Amino acid sequence: MLLCNAYLMDLEVSPTLTIPASELSWRFSRSSGPGGQHVNTSDSRVELSWSVADSTTLSDAQRQTLHTRLGRRLVGGTVTVTASERRSQLRNREIALSKLADLVSAGLAPDGPSRRSTKPTRGSDRRRLAAKEQRSETKRQRQRPSAE
Image 1: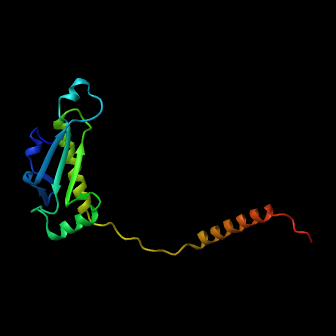
Image 2 (image 1 turned 180 degrees about the vertical axis):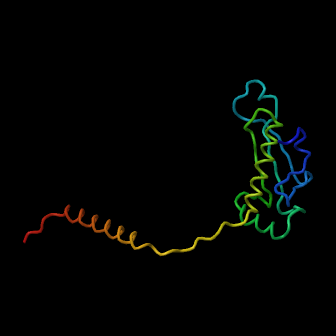
Image 3 (image 1 turned 45 degrees about the horizontal axis):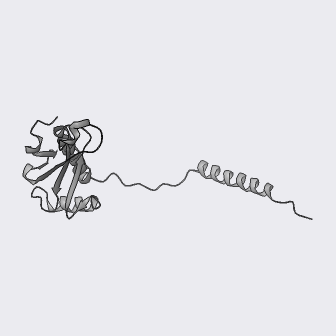
């Protein structure tokens, strides 16, 4: 759980990567949805932006990986996440930090093992051919009888 001054803390993405608070940019606005009179007076919606292109904490390889994997999410080299799930701005800040950390962590995660192609088993080949034969028989029986 993050502390009350969540917007002043560095964001730890992984044990090897921490984004300094100075690189994070916050914006607050009014949130839509329920909340009564409270929602009309407080800026509880949170936008958290981080410039991947200008970050000093990333290596060139990490920066290239993030550009490749988060290409659709990047606007001008900056990734932005929003949070307006809660009525509290503080809670939305914590959610936004968590979303950004998850996004960057997933973007930097190594690829899974590649698929090894395999040969179909003899049984699966037989079943496939039997199903084709059955389908062929069904369609043949639907045809008009030939006039011989």
